[in-house]
Amino acid sequence: QVHVVESGGGLVQTGGSLRLSCRASGRTFSGYSTGWFRQAPGKEREFVAGIKWSSGITYYADSVKGRFTISRDNAKNTVYLQMNSLKSEDTAVYYCAAGFIGDQVRSQSLYDYWGQGTQVTVSS
Image: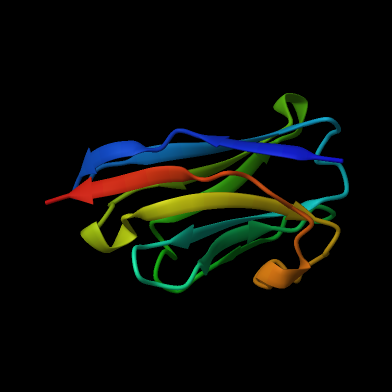
């Protein structure tokens, strides 16, 4: 069992930056691919970024490519989402998820463990 907890959300102005953290407890992220998803009010939850465990290959939604970076620190058992050049449309609840899913990081239904989410609000 993996317990996933996100942190780092908050209020930021347009063009600003935030770094979200996703920490695993109960066991390590070893073997688990990890993804970040977000859900804005009135919208479906969507894929943002993912990292394949075995290779460290990263994947991004087109809407965040070049602005967001997903990374991991194995020693700290933590996955990060660095978000730069934030836009109002990035406002959402951001969720971290983990699963033994290889490179299928875009598929929400395949993840085994989800965090409770952290709110990111970008104001103009």
